[in-house]
Image: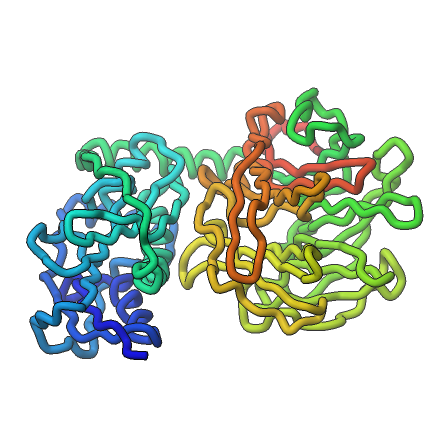
Length: 496
């Protein structure tokens, strides 16, 4: 099968790093061949914007998605090959007179640069920026793909970089999906970029807030347990009812409840005081649902562990903790439940997969995990794998990422069975890491297609002053969430 020719339009020279990466990914595609790379000249950035970016880079770090990059070679052109697909990644608006199919990106349905869209969102205190890949074919505009990125209110630069690094992969993926586009895109809208004065004023206030918050406040993660109710989203208010009080560790999070032989167990991530590396800890629940004792460590490694997904299969008990720091998904088997676990198999190798969650359905095993595009956020995209046997081999879903939306991509607990329905708890990381929990019903789950939609939510506003909540678990009798609150360092109430 012949490969369709591509004409790729970029800024530069020099070319922004994210555009250079997108071009490289397209050149690697077996479906297309790049016959021309057109450079429209560098994007001019004002002195004030450059100064703000320099300050933010020193405060927050991160890899610059706009770093000037020299392309190794530029194809000869211009080419007028009539069947070529024109891929317009330049921040300049595409021309109206291009007769060939033209794929371009737009942010919040407007023909503005990513930096302008992010700046507008930060100043307006918006939670997200939506990017669409739109195919212009004749007089019609068709929606090819969509991704939603979270806005970090403290930094337009961090938001922009994470978004653009994701868009490098998103653009390459959109090129492959463009031939199947058949849904009309919504009409464009106007979007005025923020003024330099409003952007700088907002940045100064945001930076001050970040510094003050880090100096004055502790921000621990805690766990709350209660008897299971019909509605998992309601009734979590009420002061400290069900709040688990343990030792001095600043993080007790990712709770997993598991019933075995009539006893109720709670596994969780614990980050011991003074450490930056998580371990998996365990305690048993008393008959009233309260922890019988402080948790004790049952699994640790040389790298960070979290998200202890515990499940039963073929009469044995297994755990899949998050081991993204080791770039693998590892399966452990209980040798002496709940305290002794042995490595059993490597399910996925050479991949930084966060919060791997397995469910058995329709005679197959399905593994959900958050996987970030290089240099992008791990909150934005959900990948799906399937296997006929628990130990694999595991195959990637052809529609990966099956969810590209910061409001519901990253897993937040085990997939629940509600009658004939499958409901997947997911993190909404739009306003901050682990901001809210989104319950999403799975509509289609096959080896070729996937679809889901949100049916309910738990937001921190309903948790008595919480700043974030990002995990839900139930064992049928009890249920638990984790959440993050803020306490003054001086005169704080001590233990959560």
